[in-house]
Amino acid sequence: MILLFCGFLTASCGDDDEESLPSLSNQLEYYDMMYDLTLGATFDGGPTGFSSNDTHFGRVFLVTDADNIGERVNLVFDTYSLGTSGFKAGRFDYGSIAGLTSAQRSAAYGNRSFFVNSYLVVDLNDDEELDNSEVVMITGGTVTISGTAPEYTLECDVVLENGQTVRAQYTGDFIDITDDIIDEDGVKMDEGDAKANRRAKSGISPFLLKAPKSLKDE
Image (cartoon, rainbow, N blue to C red; front, top):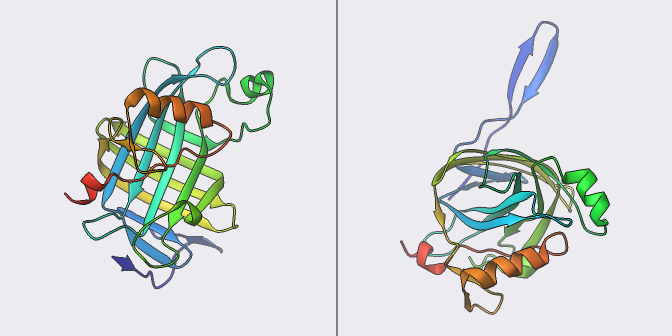
């Protein structure tokens, strides 16, 4: 499940040497570890806003190495595309709206697509299960979503709160788990409660999302 790259690919142009990173294919790179991504899932957040009116459409994306044994890594992006008619693919820049007034939020993010409260979860104790103590928040970078539902490509290059970087690429069918969200106690939430929970946490704390057990067993 884990691959190691032996080094970087280098390219030369004239007298200047430029170092380029190896491309990824359904993989996630963190520290010097490479994880094979096996599953993509998505949650429809619907129209939302960060001031008085709805201005964006929210969608959460998850990529993971989950299989029928367990999982060692999850990467979750809570994205907001500009406009309320539906989710629009594109580039999303890191944003932070915690502590901002409505006017400040509108000025900073009212006319752009962005992501907030996104994170990496890594199996630190090697029990092949992920929990809230293993969450590392994203603090910078970009993610690009291309394609149309259900087949998307997710590519990212982000910085974490611990100073490390994560690169990832995944192409495939992103399974819609809007109706299969569980709360922190493991209890299944209905769609309305899940969306309300996510909306309430926007800009304050992460909406923790995991691959449902039913998907791991497929």
